[in-house]
Image 1 (spheres, rainbow, N blue to C red):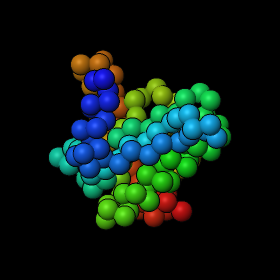
Image 2 (image 1 turned 135 degrees about the vertical axis):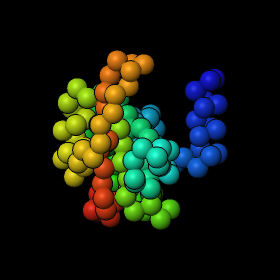
Image 3 (image 1 turned 30 degrees about the vertical axis):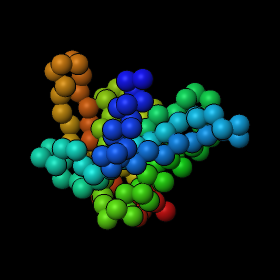
Image 4 (image 1 turned 45 degrees about the horizontal axis):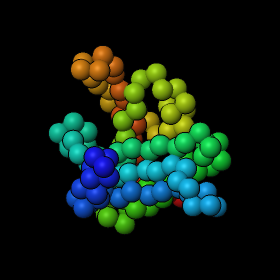
Length: 130
């Protein structure tokens, strides 16, 4: 119930949420994106907030399709560049974002999690959107 309320509030506030489903309608993954949440930290007008694929949806092109669709959604909102944050050590995600043309533009430490993360960015979302 708490997650449902969180997503409903987020969507009402302007977050775009896109789902990838299998032929039976089961959700295999999602991406969420919208305006930059931390303009004082990174200088990109758009942000991909999260992307997730269940194991059954991985290695099938769904992650790429979600990222392309998120880029197109941001472009329709006039947001021509964007970033996302990825935890250092998440090698699969780092390889994936690099393959999609993302590049590291910033790093930060998250002391409360004893972790660090990198901001991957796309200076021109039209390139990602294909």
